[in-house]
Image 1 (tube, rainbow, N blue to C red):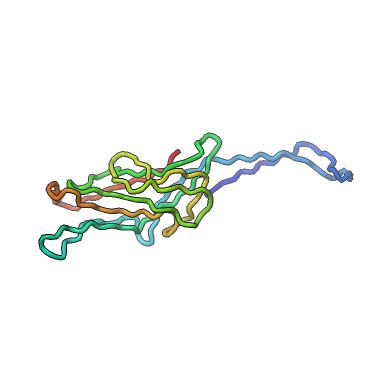
Image 2: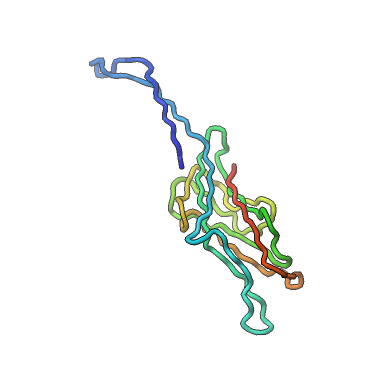
Length: 181
């Protein structure tokens, strides 16, 4: 939500340029606050489940799985005390990826919904417990609200080291997205 505050005050009466003496001049102040809002959207749920697909034949490897059902929506408006650009960061805020596996995410290019100078993807990142930029160069912009608007997030669970896999129970991870300057 963008809030624009318009403040008007009557300064004093002045005649207008057409000479009839009916014109008035007044001061107008405009205040634009800094706005940084982010949300994840999906057609069904922002909780997803990834695993490995078993091989079709003995001797073949398991297949990595992907999910692209989640979209990131944001609004960023540069205020007087903010930097001209923002980034979206992602990290694993709780839980751990099972040994021998990596969890990757990529933000695709923004859709045509919304307005302004939306950000660009930094490419695929491997999620860790440290914030990493996934979208950068966001200027004053909004992406539109809802699934199929903003940047599509594509998650991939990759089996990177067979010899390290020691899976014993389902793992629940929390991924946190933040928009900041």
